[in-house]
Image 1 (cartoon, helix red, strand yellow):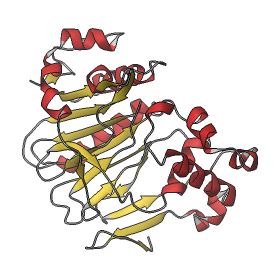
Image 2: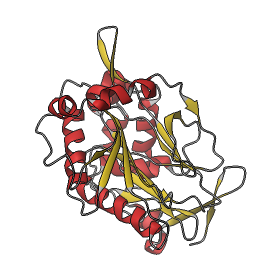
Image 3: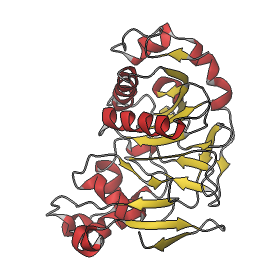
Length: 309
């Protein structure tokens, strides 16, 4: 049963996420089957993978991208916004930065892609977070609900597999159930997923997380069917050499909101990102030549190929 966030049953966002679930307890029943889903391994063909602090959107008529997805979410949340009439869909990976404006931009993207098409409504699916010691997940859940509530459009919340409802205890430790989520753009199906191929320039894109950039970036130009990266600058990072000398354990303990729950490979990914920042401290000069973005086109085999913009 959907919850009409704007102009419906939800008059205001509660100050506690547990109060929200106690009042709208049908969400607890609805996530039971989703939590038990097996993890589907999504291949590169037709996939557009979204990193933390990124979003992207497209529509069923796109003959290049048919699946949007993201993973490695612990305290982060993955949000899917879809118009039921047009099928236009946007997916974003939120970490607490730029939440309100990014939600607004995702809703606008979906409504723009739906303009002049059949009638329908805007539906939202939310996944991510768990019962963490710092309450980071709960705060992000509430921030997202508040951002959705502020939209002028009617928003129908279909899935809220977040924080308490995305939590399980193993070995006395709380863990998120959903680490990764995908959505089939043509059918609207959302499902638990992993992604062996995450696309191009991952260390370059992830570098913004460590250097002060808080804007969530739209990564896809549906009109031209191109992945668009940048341009952006990194903030000052004076201790990068010293940081690269530290052991992997330091990265897990001090560069994550949830050290115990991070997936394997977290440390290696952080190290690659830090090396990228060291080698290109000012990407506007060495990566985005003449201030131009990097563009990639997806081939039929699923590989991304660099092209001129």
